[in-house]
Image (tube, rainbow, N blue to C red; front, side, top):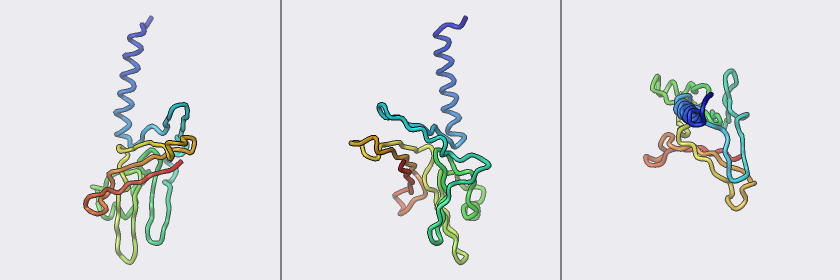
Amino acid sequence: MIDRGTCVRAAALLSALFASCEGQSGEHSCSWQYNDLHWDLSPLVKHKPSRDYKVDRSNWEFDMNVCANTLRIPPACTHQFGDKVQRAPGYQTFTHDGEIACYYMGNVNTREWGLLDEGRPEEGLKLTYKAGTSCDGRTGRSMEYHF
């Protein structure tokens, strides 16, 4: 028979193992709780063979995933950075008349959960990623989802 102490130590070990794998896989827990409210956004995470979320605006494209890095790296990023391209939860790319640009829209390990309105938590939550490509030499790009 296994005693309670052994179970607690095993649970702690498994928790640490999953936490260390979380950063390596580029995916993190996709649920958040505030007091008695709980949000589970796991159904929104894209996994292969699905495609990333994509938004087109003029000559700009945004490739994104929720709670994980994108499934694919946009060709503009591979062209610009080669094998040094970084994995990210989102990319902003520009391709027009031979000009190509790729910007990282945050880092999956910088995730921050929060409420849209702290005075009315039932209004929903936000998920923010920071530490993307610099915009002005000081400020890194970020991306924020509102649910």
